[in-house]
Picture 1: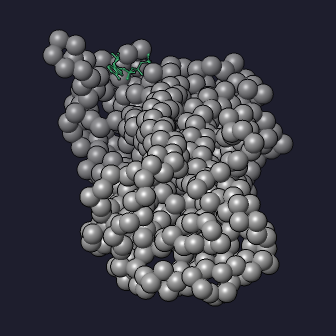
Picture 2 (picture 1 turned 180 degrees about the vertical axis):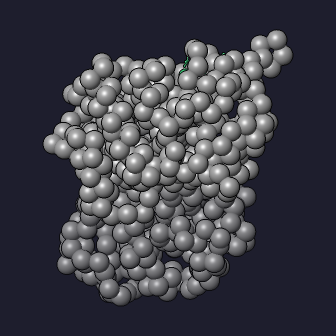
Amino acid sequence: MNLRDIAFKNLLRRKAKALFVLAGLAIGVSTVVALISFVDAMTENINHKLEKYGANILIVPKTENLSLTYGGLSLGGVSFEMQEIREQDLTKIKSIKNAANVAGLGPMVFGVVNVDDHKVLLAGIDFKANWILKPWWKIDGTIPGEKGVVLGSETAAVLGLNQGSPVTIKGRQLIVSGVLKPTGSQDDQLIFMPLETAQTVLNKEGLVSMAEVAALCKDCPIEAMVKQISDVVPGAKVMAIQQVVKSRMEALAQFKKFSYGVSIVVVLVGSLVVLVTMMGSVRERTEEIGIFRAIGFRKSHVFGIVLLEAGFISAAAGIIGYIAGFAVTKGAIHFFSESGGASIHPNLELIGGSFVLAVLVGLMASVYPAYLASRMDPNQALNAI
Amino acid sequence: MSYIKAEGLSKQYGSGDATVLAIHNMDFTVEAGEFVSIMGESGAGKSTLLSIVGAMNPPSSGKFVVDGIDVYRLGSEKRTDFRREFIGFVFQSFHLVPYLTVVENVMLPLTTVKMSKKKKRVLAEEALDQVGLAGKEDRLPSQISGGEKERVAIARAVVNDPPVILADEPTGNLDSSTTREIMGLLQRLNREGTTILMVTHSQDCAAYAERILQVSDGRLIGKDES
Ligand SMILES: Nc1ncnc2c1ncn2[C@@H]1O[C@H](COP(=O)(O)OP(=O)(O)OP(=O)(O)O)[C@@H](O)[C@H]1O
Ligand SMILES: [Mg+2]
């Protein structure tokens, strides 16, 4: 028999009290686990959506003119007669403070060309970056090589061209390598070709008309990134595209704060439950502690017994609390998130964290009761019986 | 030099108007291997005296020495260790731990001692054997009689072989035949060399002792009756 046996046997005898402490801690831990994993799952979900959302920062040349297009309707011929940005300035974006958050950078060059009798807007783009910037793009056909172009769906219809059709632009013989499926955007009315080819065709070597940036953000400050980019690309206007996702991120951040608050309160209440119950249990055990002290248990031994008991319960509460919290989150996510976008998986850090949290809170709340127990005077304790 | 030596021992409880002088300027000695009984009217200070001897109750003044150790000059934890090594307690109301079995109760004084579980168990069973309780090791205190509880208490007091046993009215709750058995047990322990101090109200029990310390109103009177 050792101190551990005594602690364990006492717990078994006072099952109701032990269960009460266990419940107090487990509820606290499970609340924390549930809130944290819920927020995590939602954040992951939103980040995922954010990735699918594509570009969220635009870099355009500074211009004195006001835009003469509205909702895709052009009200004048000057909208593309503007200054350009030097392509090499864009490379500096790789060195901004939040460079790691830049998932994609897509320079574009625009120019008007004649195809047959039609004036068409030609866009030179970086097809690789486009997968990130415009993940919704679907091309019937292949990505064009040096001598290829991709047509917007309306362009293809208006010009009466298909995949494989030859097309002449500024005297160059080119081939339609693919047709973009309708996107519902202005892209449907453009002709696309690789950036370098377009720069040559339009006599705009080393220049770009605008650039799109996809910033991947967990907590990344879009506004700050806009500022950082403006600083390195002179003569450009950098704008954030406001998004629904962003406001959802903000709502989530609010919820996160709120859930930290709730967690703290619940854990505090849990530790109060532990404190009060352990105090009661220590008082009830006056006689027993008196016996222990009388027959030669040191103060530290008595202190140890109480903390061992608290430790046993807290460890169990940590495990049970994690499992309960996990289950609750799973249920909540099933309930709240339409189409099962979010999901949670057992998280080792969180398992370890809830274990440590439970044991830490359980022990800390038991330090005072254990101290009281260890200070009991054996003579008085036994006389009182 | 005597084994146990008290000099000018006083104990006062409370303060101001509520002061109780439970022990007043006591001097006495006990030799190793003696069997001493302590008698006196209720409230005379017998239990207080025993608790001082048991290193559980610091006197207000005076000196108390056991085996050359000035007990109350020891620090609190050291004094606890002294209790564990030198003193076995037998209480009137048994003071068994209700959720531990008979053998576990007997093992209690060994709990904090470095020793294998097996060895502890063997020692506890031997002690139970000595008090005639072999076979009831795994019962709970609630499942044995009063006399048997007293024997468990004695077994617990002797399990770590302390040189001194202190008993406060060990037979107060028992009938006369059980009382005789318990007294016989204590007498046997005494003959095997254990020093015993026992508080009792019963002349019959006191008769087992070699000497009686008579306490009245916190003082020793008529020293060295035999
Ligand atoms: N912890 C205490 N606080 C205050 N007074 C106490 C305390 N313990 C004992 N006393 C008082 O000290 C005196 C001696 O008490 P003690 O218990 O030593 O008497 P006793 O001789 O053992 O009596 P009994 O035969 O009834 O057990 C009594 O007046 C008692 O009220
Ligand atoms: Mg008494």
